[in-house]
Length: 105
Image 1: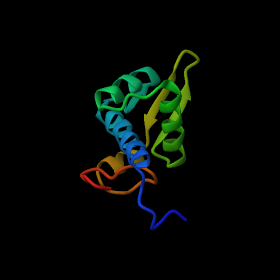
Image 2: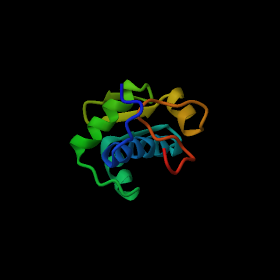
Image 3: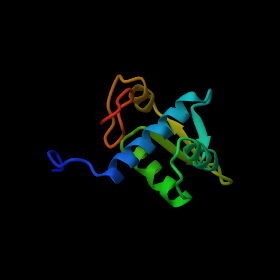
Image 4: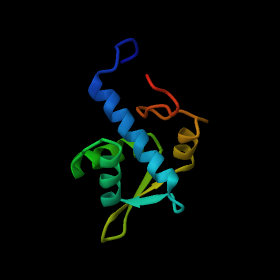
């Protein structure tokens, strides 16, 4: 178990990036964005990540049930789930995603 061990800077950065993805998706009327849009949006949040790194973050969020991914054949679309929206609103906590409204966690 990783309880008890303080999070590294890298872990905190990734948790913050996962929250940024959920926040961006929550701001969309459709609740969804393409991979390209997310890479750009993360850069605006100060997270300069490669496509591969963003794909890994999205896979982590799928595991946490915060997003679903579907491929249109042209592009990869990410859609926020009910659980993802609940996390952004502070109603529930998803694994390995920074809590909203918290400066330290």
